[in-house]
Image (cartoon, rainbow, N blue to C red; front, side, top):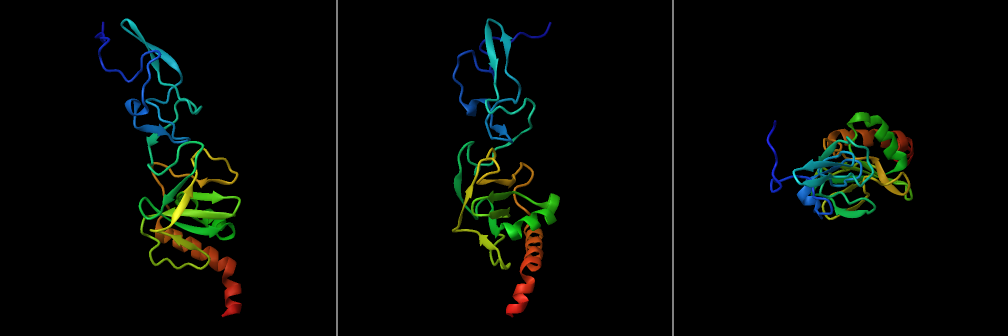
Length: 199
């Protein structure tokens, strides 16, 4: 027979009716909506000597077994957008849909996070912090220190402001040289003939 856990032993599971802060549970969150939970399991109970403890519930509604990941401190909570200063966690490059979408397709798996504003038809490509210093690509606007970008929650739908390519724990921004080349190629394809006539 295995060892018996005493009532006073530390447990990640709250007592029935006990109020527990997210910080006590865990520092991880659901990659889909950032809801914090100790474990991404279905609701249930575990029985300890003389007490019944609740297993944490994923209140975001995500499926049990979703992969937990580190919390990105600049991401807003579900249902909110946040204005974030560029230059600390990342820089951004603002481009119109007409230039940005071909670049996203060309980048394929090398594409990092991209914010899409369906209302203004603008994309923001995230890249390495400091990478847009001296940035000069026709048709694009660098967003570094002293500029701000409105960031949607990961749960945002495909209307208005949302993630065309969401950030992950493994990748946030597109590598600067790769992004510059893709946007330059897209710009040359879309604006090259016009620029030639104006020269």
